[in-house]
Amino acid sequence: MKLSSILLALAALVSPAFSYAISHLPRSEGGLDIKLTAIGNTRIKAIITNKADRPLKLLRYNNFFDDAPTQKVEIFKDGNAVQFEGIYQHIYMTDLPDEDFISLTPGESIEREVDIATTADLTQGGAFTISSQGLIPFAEVDSNEVTGAMAFHANDLEMDVDGAVAATVEKAIKPVDKRSRLTNSCTGQRRTATVRAIQASAQLSQRSAQVAQNNAQKLQEYFKQTDQRTRQLVVNRFTAVARESTVNGGRTTYDCTDRMGHCQPRTIAYTLPAQNHITNCPIFYQMPLLTNRCHGQDQATTVLHEITHNPAIVQPHCVDHGYGYQAVRRLNAQQSLQNADTYSLFANAVHVGC
Image (tube, rainbow, N blue to C red):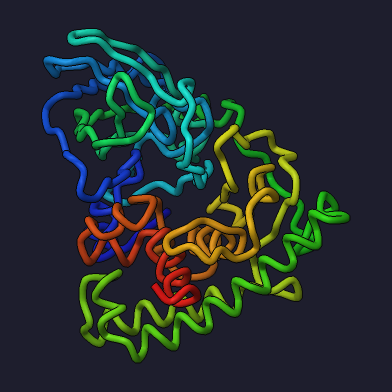
């Protein structure tokens, strides 16, 4: 994603390397060390070490432990962020199983290798800067309930890339079918559910834009400020999402089944921001169209959430800074404006009357 110098400052606040804020939960500093080293033209190694004096039980999604092509690092060329070509995945956070966590005893290290050219175009070659920072949620060793977030800030890594060699690296994501809004994977009940969710997203977004325009208290609760600039940015994004929530036009395409193979057991849906494409996962169809529970998850707010990730709608697009109401309450104002779940939770609150 090529950003202007103004937007780069904002991008720094929304580091996608699992900046997963957990509100009202302990934030541990200095207990997790991540060292990045180059091991090839575009391959890097991350050595993750538990520096704490106790065992760590870390959630494996959207970080170096995740095998999915999620954004684990930021890549910069001449001060500009290189566009990310992988996926943002929306995770179902209820009843997490044991296999969703990675355990590290004090002093233990785990190594993970990543080819950064699989999710970024590095064919220009030359000097690139690789960075990674954020928070990784953790649970206590005898529980699977997330109780805190472990902060990390890896070393900046300078790499000199051979562009011709980088061009030979197979991409994690293939080009998607752009001939129709709903691909031929959308049939039967899944097509019906997806269409209804898109339509409900339009209604939620329209109503949310109205509330954001007129309800300063609600705007303060979710976006931390009520000034005219904040109000207009929120209204504009909701309006854009409402306009995009249609099966007749727009720039976003949908898969109703996981043809690309990136759904994990806890993934509700995922977005390819570089292609403005959304894929629904099996869990999506097990959820209600609209929940009546404050801060709950459903199909309509999932569609709204995923659309905010697409740069063709509003730039800069939203990232996943934090999931859930408690996480959203902890974000600062600038992070809130760029956090996908802030918008979906705001819309849920408008619908339910939270």
